[in-house]
Length: 221
Image (cartoon, rainbow, N blue to C red; front, top):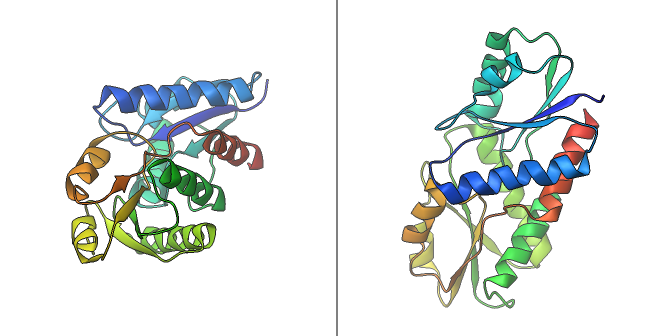
């Protein structure tokens, strides 16, 4: 048997978001038929990574299903690994930033009605972590390259400028690229903040390129 794969996500109380994360785990498991693939959450839901690791013998590769390496990836997750006392677990890099995610963002934008005209805003959850902020700016540049257009950055929760402020400042129709993995609290909040936008793209979800990226993170480790 190959190393087990533990996908770690944030967690959400929304049934749609939980179902999407379970579907993501299922799609990854289909790509890795000889690998045990499990799902854990750092907040809201269980099992926690610490609990999941105590049930997984042998080597475990942990892939953080996060779009930037903020607090949960750089501090919380390693702490839970230490508390589990697991002797053979390794943490892979987070999903983002990666050019593949910019491809998915662009596809989601076009599905939301963006045809090359109008303003584009990249909506991120927001963070006070400087490393994660830098990674979000990297994603912004990657999306600009993918679209061959200027993109503005807006935050949903922490940090500035907020999405609602950016949308109000934009002239003409505005389309929002949702840099979130699943439908949860931040996605619902974004719908309120970007109510004045012409279109809001869907979360990244279980797009095949997202599944490929997660498998690639596992195999690289």
